[in-house]
Length: 370
Image (tube, rainbow, N blue to C red; front, side, top):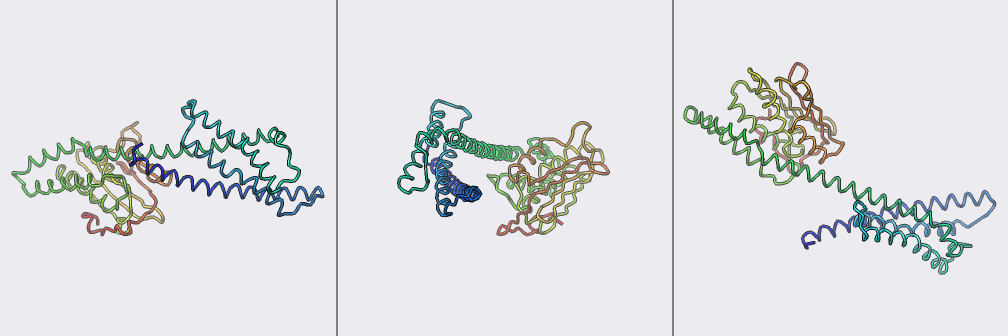
């Protein structure tokens, strides 16, 4: 592993170890306190009195021995997952199990020799026979928890990587046939209407620059997404003329919200290509954004031909937006799509509200928002 890759890995592992240690300490010391309370209550019912300090000390030490063993089990599961068992991986986990079972017994006896915490502690061999299944099961359970955490983390990383790959695909795409049609339209009008051709060239340049300037999937202000979508729709309006009408309804506070990049343009493109282009008379595209409590509500709809029978509410554009919302927000985001009352198609997105804060962008910078 190169030094450049090793450093983030080591730092990440150190943070995980620190978190696991804190969580294991809280869990096992809490477990020890509860066990001490239960022990004292039971012995009191039997008429046996044991000082609380002695009971608590013994139970806290007994439970506390599981703290390093818990961290060991989680660390081994993260470093040597059993998804593809090899002799090395199996040997490592069997070694951890041996430490948890036999090493713990040895430590208990040595501590009892020094501290005398456990009255009438059984001999080591007797303790081994009595406690072996319980300790082995506890360590195996901790190993299972470690594997669950490992694979959940791996799943989240894969989701994020897929979202980044999809975003890169969308940026690299901006649909070649769209560029082809735009350039053809520019060539067709450049002699008869130079001003119109110039506006299209400027809009096309802005569209490409904004689509490519963000090289990652960090959230961007909605105003920037609106500006990008406006450029796209302006170009399409130059192509379709009066057949395409665009209505914007973006509130000032919504324009400052943070959203995943390229969340609006694919939906607007779907509305034009699948909703209005097949319709002889064209139609209207509405882009709306408003804050609704702790959520941001985005709507992209058209009054075009609507979904084809049996096509459902799928599609590449919708699928890409849905996957990136899931990677960014998990179950906190919601996307619904389907036929619009009165004809056409509607997509509604609800995402957690996050303000751009220092990245404030005035609504006026997003031309076309009104």
